[in-house]
Every structure is written in structure tokens, then in C-alpha cells.
Image 1 (cartoon, rainbow, N blue to C red):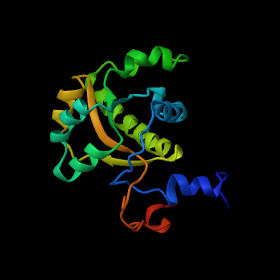
Image 2 (cartoon, rainbow, N blue to C red):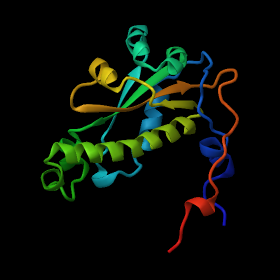
Image 3 (cartoon, rainbow, N blue to C red):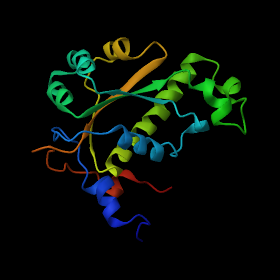
Image 4 (tube, rainbow, N blue to C red):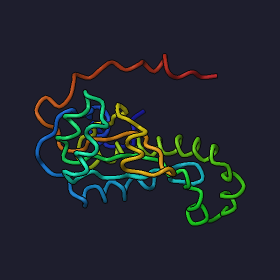
Length: 196
């Protein structure tokens, strides 16, 4: 059985896409990121809670604040990327539920009154949205370099607040020279999927 998605699009999003470690000097525009968001915002989350929040790092001043918070192996590529996105969760996402989930606006008070419950749900659904965001970056013809090698507490203090938890940092741009490693192996279908 074939997939409905065109093979060229499958290649763009999955088979030919790689994590980028170097980038060309070509800028990433606000319009490109807006287009990415306008596509991926339709992907599902539980209760349509949409807890992902994105901080775009463009200025030299912001890069200088971020660089020392990155793991050493991630520092140079983050400083040189045309655009850097901090992906975080909003742990107060429930305040938006009456608007985002109008057919059951009580979900805010029925399920999400306790902070630990919100944090767990935001982490799961924000991670889903982070995956969608990376696919959106690829759909825009750009490369993404997602990383979790950074000082989480430091990034939260420097760029966020107590209601937002960093998930990952993503370098974004057109791939540069030697941007990626050769494709690593993947697990076969039979090792991943079980039918009961």
C-alpha cells in the first residue's frame, strides 16, 4: 500500500531530512516561521491544549546570553545558526482552554486545577508540538538542529519565567557545508510494532 503523501514530500519531511550541524548564511525570515506555525498549529494535542511556546533568538545580544548556557558541543553551531528557537511549555495553558476547547470549556477546572497535572500534560503535548514544529521547518525547505544539551534552569531564568519550562532548542536554517552525518540505522518494523 502506498501513502497518500507525494514521495517527494515524504523525502523532504523524512527520508532526506537530517539534523543540521552547520548552516549557510542565508537568513530565515519571520514570514517563513509564520508560515511554519500557520501549518503546524492544526496538528492535534489533548484537549487542543496547545502548550508549546516559542522564543526566537535573532539578536546578537540574545545569542550572547544563550551561548554560555549551551553544552560545549552545541555552542558554535547555535551561535552560527541563522535562527534559534527555544521551544518551551506554558504550564498555565489551561487558561486558554475555554477558547481553544469551546465544546467543553469546563475542562480547565475539571482536569487541570493542579500544577503537577498541568506540567505533565504540557510536557507531553508540548513535545508532540515540538515534533510538529520540526516537520514544519522541514516543510519550509529548511533544516532543523534540535538539542537538549543546555542548562535548562539557566535558559528558563534568562529567557522564560516560572510558568514556562524549556523543552529543547532548535537551530534553524539552510544546511551548510558538511551539515549532517551519514544516516544512522533505524529499527525494523518487526522490532517496533506488535499486533495482539
